[in-house]
Image 1 (cartoon, rainbow over the protein chains, first blue to last red):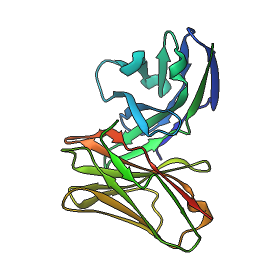
Image 2 (image 1 turned 90 degrees about the vertical axis):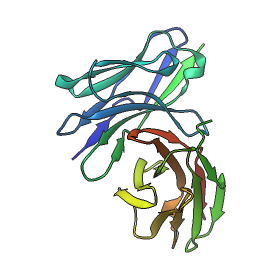
Image 3 (image 1 turned 30 degrees about the vertical axis):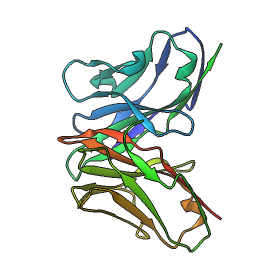
Length: 114
Length: 113
């Protein structure tokens, strides 16, 4: 069965520091992978996506993610975090086959300290 | 602003009642997805409609149903509500030809008392 694991429930970083949020997936075929961000009281916003090709994908707001098939991972990174990046981050896997289904991880809450 | 609208923003109702949540997709998008976000279950896919037809089903309870109308807006109907149905309900729409590029609405917060 498909699943997404975000092992870090909560992460705190200092403003200006680098960030890496972990995501591991379980899926039999090549997955479609996504990172979404949810600010308090808001809906989810797509940060970036991976379908195929270059395993390093660039997204909005200075985020990037790297697909590593051997590790079943799709970690999100940002070289320098801004206070406005404080939010909840969700990794998701999209599958084809029996409909287009999304499986979301449980999310990682990011706190940015000045 | 994603372009997806949802009404109402908040809804408070009692157990056993029935409510209807409404979603209007972005202009030009044919697919609508419904998600439930709760503290217990996280973010779960409920159901997808494409141009009026049900396309995919996730963890949707039998007490819940949805439909998509000819003008492409969608409604999620929740009946015989239980306390555990309290959650944020999101609607998303996707780009034509790309089901994974989804744009989420602001959500409806349902509180069942």
